[in-house]
Length: 226
Image (tube, rainbow, N blue to C red; front, top):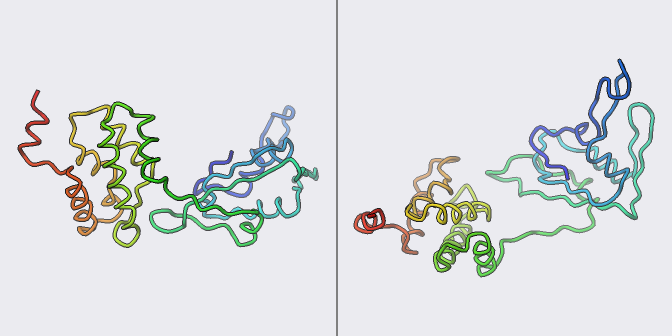
């Protein structure tokens, strides 16, 4: 697996220069993940391909030609009959940064799948697997809120609610059951950290309120009472 970031460069995917590993006083190369995959075969997972700002054109050359020539002249080839590549990426739009893969590289993948959010009942069931002590009805309410807010991205909200975000919210609810759920939600999912927008804040509060998660002062005192 290659987990990419903004600073991933072409040469990072192939090999790292070394000194002394291949003999005293000698420089050499240590194979990185892509080169090891070419040699061994199997499945190569390229995670978050949109992130490298410099581009990753070297992958296109490898997938097109089936080989790579090292600086020392060695040619590494891979067996296409036993080697597969899976790439993941987010849409390159706020808040995600990066560069979409080139058309040439994208065309090397035989199939493109758009991964959508889980159906509400399945997402709630997944959350209950990890945090079964949380009231199932509350979990369903949180999933409903998340799905309602997801529809407002990116027109009103600058940040989508990822399944991971919802997982953190439910985890906090289980670990600190006396905390305000609305407060947990607002601190975990906080679009204001990206863009200060009163419309976003108002929308979130409205949705939380319509689902009964905004407390009155009396309810807050009751929740905090020993």
